[in-house]
Image (cartoon, rainbow, N blue to C red; front, side, top):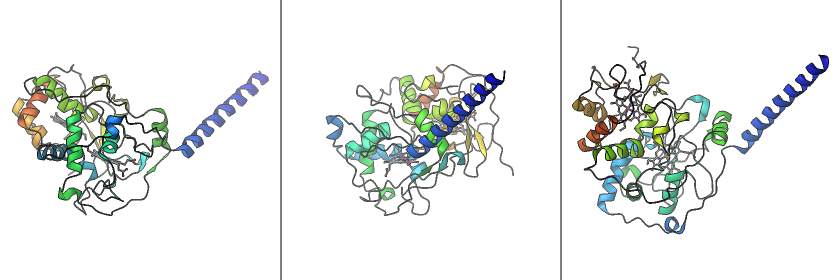
Length: 325
Ligand code: HEC
Ligand code: HEC
């Protein structure tokens, strides 16, 4: 018995020691690096900056980039503290993505931007943790539009030398980036934007690939599948706890067509007003981090509505946020 106890103590000590070693290893190793290996087509990518692309890129950015990268003080995309990121992940800034060639992305090539937006890997091999989204399912043409816009003379992107200290991710974030998250692979073949006559396919594209509505509207950011969104835990069933800018928890809504806990009773007009203008059909506004997606066309929102009719329903009564006063 004594012997067994000794063995147990030793093996427990061993496990504790191993865990401590693993923790300090991850602490020192930090966010892992990955090989930067774009093929020749990406290396030589030159996106022609035509005005349609710049306009489409500006629209996509208003849906996807400005929210995190816009600094209210400079009124440009010089980066901002990620206030709504839970403090257990560390203190992180989105970075300066203005056209400044030293402090922004003015010196990045089109190929570097393309590779980074798909995978999160920079030319020097450093990897942006999941707080910077990756776009593995976005159509090539939409990525080109973002790149054309990033090069444009939009005042949001006017060069600014604003600089931040290196992002400090803590042990928990480093652990997740070593064990749970990894860069998505590049698509094997070109991705095209579905034709607007195929409403369900277009709705799936806008909701899953472009706007990543499912990311917030499924159960848990850590259990989402960015390559096969419909494999995410609780796909569109809502309940994902997130923080508003005051640090209070706001759960996402159930967007499946469940009659009691989802949005089956919305009309398509109510859905459109909710998505585009942040109106809650039950009265009052929809609260942050849901934001008005004004840049989406009515056709795109109607396509999302058509697509959501095809998503399996989930019964999940979400406790909705109520402001204190
Ligand atoms: C949810 C917040 C969020 C959104 C949305 C977001 N970003 Fe970021 N972005 C970040 C964070 C945080 C970083 C810093 C990551 C790191 O520490 O490596 C970053 C880094 C970057 C970088 C690297 C900058 C550098 O100097 O290394 C680029 C380029 C970039 N983002 C572009 C974009 C574009 C373009 C979009 C829209 C298509 C976008 N981001 C959307 C949060 C965001
Ligand atoms: C950054 C996270 C986030 C993203 C991205 C997001 N939502 Fe939301 N959404 C929320 C949250 C949180 C709520 C709940 C807000 C509340 O309770 O007032 C919500 C509420 C809603 C509602 C109201 C449903 C109801 O029952 O009241 C609709 C409709 C909706 N979102 C649709 C969408 C669509 C469509 C997209 C993509 C185009 C999208 N959302 C993207 C977080 C998000």
